[in-house]
Length: 320
Image 1 (cartoon, helix red, strand yellow):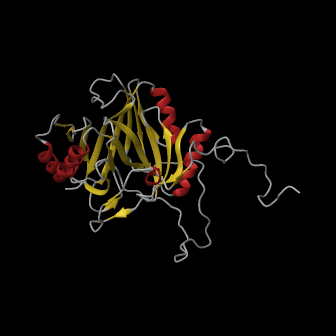
Image 2 (cartoon, helix red, strand yellow):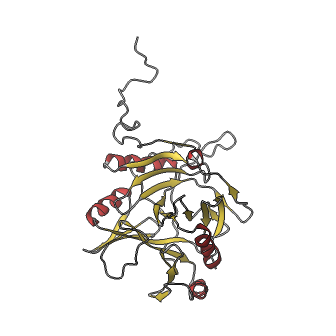
Image 3 (cartoon, rainbow, N blue to C red):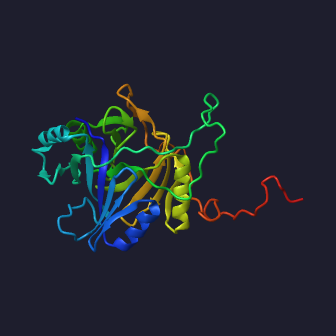
């Protein structure tokens, strides 16, 4: 049994109309809506639900809304779901209904597992020419006017007890440690073979439970930039980015979300196998970001926010 990744996330929020516009600008498709709930989908069918905070049946949050209330993970088939059922049956908050099995994790988050509803897709992605490999021939790299996220790639939570929460995900759901901030953070992937992390657990010096961010996978670095510029043009605030994470190698751009905390576009993370040996890092600014732009890039001027707009001259056209 192994998890295949995130199938669905559910936020609890108060301003559904603002969330509606945000996630449409983000590039998701609106699948269904009511006075109490919005349901969006990504390219591969991953679902993002935004529910009114007082909606009946909504799991309790680990912090005040707006925040993430529930994460649903996918497995390949009914036999794998039976295996999860056996592993979680004695856990606090155990539920088994409507094709989902779940419980409450040690940090207080509602987690569920279902046979995956996502579907395989093939998308055209940019190729990169390096000194050794020239795979892009007679073909220009793409430029995107906006992003259309493929899926929710990972979630990041602040936890009150890193060791206990990390052990739960490893022992009960088969997660594997990719890298560590000893005593402070664990990067976890669903299975031995896969992207660098599907879940990152972070314990602050003064521990608290909460959401840090939800990350959306896009096809290539150009889509990170195109999506970020579009969000900037729409008036949404950048928290940090674009930039690059040295630990996972991913290119990122973070925005402040009305559904809670931050959301991230990212691409080009490391791909790992069971031969990978977890590394240990000391937390610090250069460990989080090799480089990053604070405040983002203005979507209209295409320059760093508050920088002088382009004049139309060539950079080599110096005043006499």
